Image (cartoon, rainbow over all chains, first blue to last red):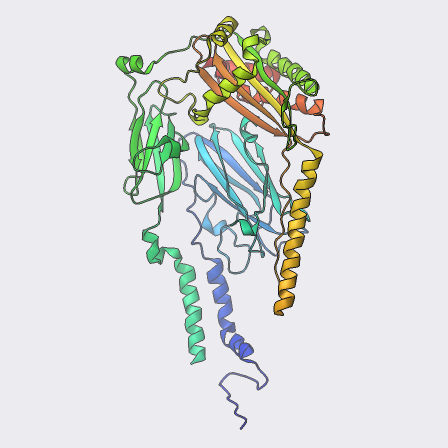
Length: 194
Length: 361
């Protein structure tokens, strides 16, 4: 006996179960996509604004790396995640997800400017290989002092080659004593090392 | 029924994506992040945090100088904090989720405490003497893993000292001099100096309640006293990797990668799997670098006033270290000592006014 079940939807007899499921869940996909993209569970709160009248310094994060897996570039797309003193450098709304289903935690391409109170700070950066999840970068922390009225620049560049996934970091505004202690290149860790 | 299940699953995905991990019951046992504010009166004190309930320096991490603001994980039991500043009693307290803000009132050392702790104040320095304690070239990863002072390292040492002396003269003029007292350029003195530094947390130099004093042998003390003023003990070593080591460091990762791929392929063939994975091993990073360490010591009190370290990655033409690398290192290092990346007279003028040079300590 050849038994065929027909539902209310336009299911063809030739449809497989998966095709049928996709048709059912299809209308929900945009909603799932938006919800997943807006997920900010891992995102830190934004850096608090300095008190009025307090001496401040400027920290510029110059991100020349990708913030999207679909960015038009020759190299493998690497997204950047930065925290300053544990806080997110910019508002959650301005952060990028980079790829479908990921939470928004990537620093957007371009220059992000942060007003920091003069004093000692810690910047932590790591990166994410977009669309290639097994690879990861270990976080790198640098501690530094800032003086009121001065501007400091940290520039991130994707220096990936055929053999290695990596990004480089350049520093402006600090003495060479400090910058020589900080890594100027961060390489992808071996997946087995985790 | 299947359709209903799918819709429930989709809704579950939406809920978990928007709610995040904070709704998980396990969150209570994990450290929670809190905004920590630490200030002190007077400001500019050094803060260290220890995860234990009682402060343990060997476990402590430097957090920075007051005032500071951090978003950091805090366990329910809290962390212990030590705040130190020269001339003041060490302040100890606790950070917890309930009390994440500290405003420490630092108490100056009493006369009795100064006497008991051996407090001293170094007199101002009018001269600076640069002493090249340890200079040379070291080849890493070979059987002859010794520190070569001469003749292989002669070119590096001479060029480094010439460039270093020129840069220092531009900054300090006739106040700076180069000296090589016999007692201070020996391997024994270097070993003693390195040993003395082992118990010192570099981050706390200048922020301990009592200045750090280095204890040397009698003949070394006499040599230091003869120099009068501040003494900059300099170590400059060029390190490079031999050709054989470079080959090994490149070949092994390639072999491991090939082995991993072959193993994955054979397993996939045996099991009939349509795909397989393998691991790519990257080559080890190059170790070629010039390492420069500087210890600023007061000739009279032996106070360790400042410590600086610079590691300059350089690529040498094996097996000889190029003179260009030595010049570059010698020109960059004084910038670290002066506390500014500016060079020459401009830096001299700036530092004379700002008082940021360690010599003004």
